[in-house]
Image (cartoon, rainbow, N blue to C red; front, side, top):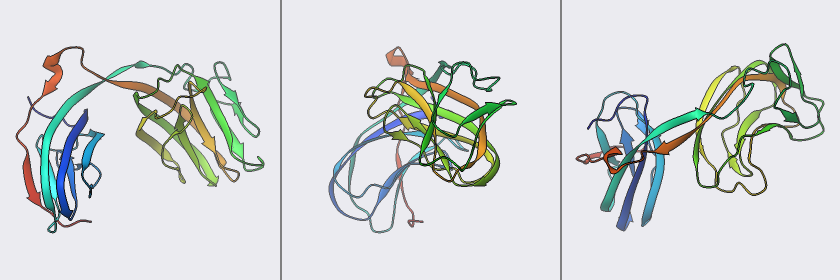
Amino acid sequence: GELVAGNYYKFTFTLSNYSAGNVRPYAGSGGAGTYQSADGTYTEVIKCVGTSSLNMWADIDFVGDIDNVSIVKLHPGYELVSNGGLDGDTGWSSGLGWTIAEGVASTNGTQSGSSFLFQDVGIVNGATYEVTYTVSGYIAGQVRPVVGDIGTGAWAVANGTYTEVIECSDAGQADNISLQADADFNGSVDNISVVELREGLTDTEQITFTITVSDQNVG
C-alpha cells in the first residue's frame, strides 16, 4: 500500500540503545512527527503531506537503534458536533462572556478569566479526534480547543481556520468538546467540527512499509 496525502496515520516505533542526537518519523514530504531523544516506544498521529514515502529522519548526531515500526491508517468517523455552524445556541453551553448570535459564538474580553463554549459529544478516553474551527473578528487574546478534561490544542491568536489532531488523555467527568477563551479573547468562533479518527476494523487496514533513515539537520 501507499501513504495518501491528506490521510492520517498512527505511527509507532521503539528507540533503544540511544546515546546522542534526535530522530523522528516523516509521512510524505512534510508530515513531520516529533523528534525523540531517549529510549522508549513512541506513538503519534501524523497527517501525510506530499509524496507517499515514509521515512525516519535522523539528525547528523543521532546514535541509536529503531525497531518495532508500525503504521496504521486512521479513518474519520461521523461528525460528532451538532449545530457546528452555531445557528442559534441549540446544543451548546457556555461560561461567562460567551454570546451566540448571527452564526458565531463570541466573547469581547470582558470575561473575568478563562471561559468555555462546550458541547457533550461523548468524548472517549484514549481516543484521537480531528478538531476544526474558524476564528473571525479577532481583536485580542487567544482561544484553543479542549477535548475532554485535559486534551488541549494550540492557542489561536489570529483569524483563520484551524485543524488539529488531539488525543483525549483524560475524559474525566467531561465528555465535551470545548473552545477555551482566555481572559482577553475578543473575537468569534464558528464552523466547529469534531470527528474521531479510528483504526480499521480488520487486519488488512495495517500497512507495512520499508523505512529509510536519512541524515537531516534539526530545524
